[in-house]
Image (cartoon, rainbow, N blue to C red; front, side, top):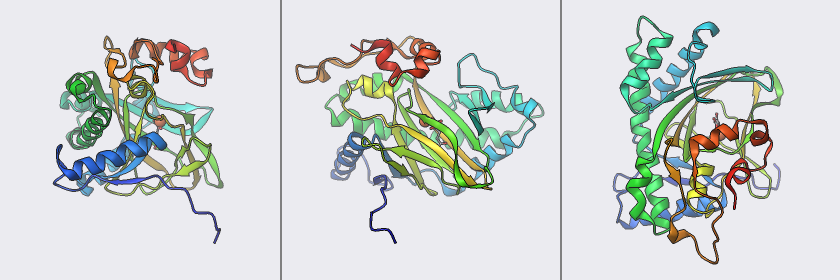
Length: 314
Ligand SMILES: O=C(O)CCC(=O)C(=O)O
Ligand SMILES: [Fe+2]
């Protein structure tokens, strides 16, 4: 046994049925959330409102989708970069993904289903939609806790209404090697909040501020909650947006799914006055996230250490 303790993400228990705003329990969890997001930008949440069976069915649906022929998957195109089918990239040959915009709206999910299965696949639509609905509660709770932590809960409705739910399904093929191969390149998320779950195959690593990589091991009923650049910009840099990557080894495929809250086009992300003062000068000029993404996917945007800073840093 090595003497160095293995780094672990903080685990925060959201499973109590009494976890309601205003209770002592809520305040305690809220403090843990703030601490974890300041330090790691990320934590593992125990959350039992998503039934284990539903999580299993959802991951089964992910596998069913990626088992479809490539031509079928390619039918899922999107105007927005990184929202349609992504795969067959030389840089990350193990990786494939498909995004579903507004996955909390049944008809939107069913739209994708019909593209992939013209004869229909109600089980797929129902599973993805129901999973998204249940998991979105964890997003809402986390965001309420974050805003309360900084005393800006009066903006809660505006904040909630400013985002859409993008649900992205991912497959990482097993590389058939014992040494780790890159599944997904190191990056920070650009959106608001990301919640990830996976099958039994681990692979997600989160980098600390000091540069060490923490391997995450979420299980059933546990989810990795992470903040993106847009939320941190709105908070005027109060939290930390972590670099993360996926490393794969062995023969088994990793299936994962992410619920991404994404600022709507036309909404201007602007830090509230309460979070700007002499000690905390404004870090980012107000910006439209969708316009920013156009820059993010240019070569300059991709090469920048922080694309957001390059785009609208003060
Ligand atoms: O598959 C995962 O666990 C991570 C995916 C990810 O980081 C992303 O899609 O931004
Ligand atoms: Fe990510």
